[in-house]
Length: 113
Image 1 (spheres, rainbow, N blue to C red):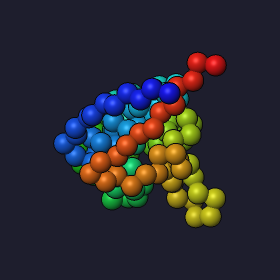
Image 2 (image 1 turned 90 degrees about the vertical axis):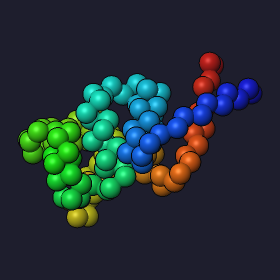
Image 3 (image 1 turned 180 degrees about the vertical axis):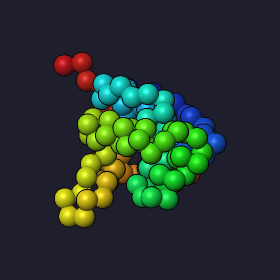
């Protein structure tokens, strides 16, 4: 097996999360808009709560609570976030629920068989 090393520098944890989720979506054949990727990145960094939703709206990533609900519905539909069965909260998919440290490494196996 050959290894290919690619270094990517980001300016913030949100940008780091967006890079991670973009790669995940590309390899999983999930198509998301840039806005939906940004919303998911914010949820990965700040968790899915009312404060994060307010930040997304205040930062003008989305314009209304309805568009935020639509984005969350799309993210739920493709399996990137899910509703908790116990307390009706939203959670990040286990595959993307990672600790965003200063360096995050990805191990990608591409098989042609």
